[in-house]
Length: 309
Image (cartoon, rainbow, N blue to C red; front, side, top):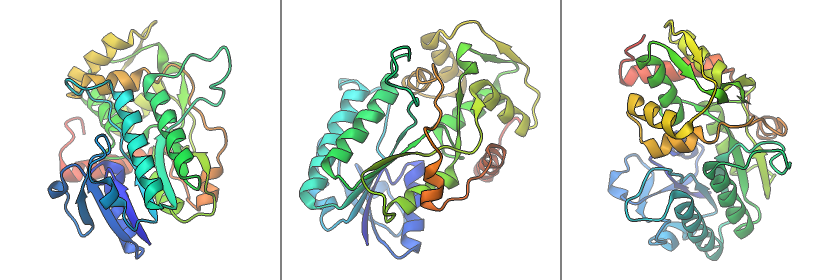
């Protein structure tokens, strides 16, 4: 099968490209700078935001992975959710015209009762993920969307943010959103789901892709600290003050403030799976949260030291 992977240089794309090739698929990798891609996959240049190169990249492709997502600031450009919409529409239109049979999309976990009147409105980050999902599935009806919460992996930016905060803060201040719960998933497990989704007979569906453990955000941070073998007392705060706390966290972790603000704004409610069907339907045995963190920290330390370990 001929497969296109967008976002091939990102952490999810980098996980699945070699696996897809090992299974015998012909893989084409799309990037704005094709020369920056390494590996045996065919590298092609293109930009979903402008639409340039998409038709060439999608020519002859049967399945296309849409792994494009960015919340960073872009000087003199529209805000990120508008850029996300335009890029998705460009890609969806090009994929439809190229006769692509399926798009596989990795999006974000949505609250199970997101339509309830008492439910807080979705953050721009989650609303954008949901909008992109609708655009892609409408254009290519046999597509599959996987909705994941925090992905635990050595290259996952949300996980790296938490690890850096644990490393660099002697006390862990946990805002009011610490009580809300979610279901983090091991990067190995989401990669397996993405690979299986290319050929599984379940097109036209959005599947929640949760890990097996339900944890509050406060528990997630404390468990990471414990697994890093560091003592970090936690200080519960009575408010969230997301714009301020996110900028402070970004400065401490050396991350882009726009990314951290977007992530923290999505922590104002439970993000729990509607069901746990994805792992069974896609034939994936899930790793526990602790196993996921241990594996991610081990991979991290193979490339760079962790100061707190």
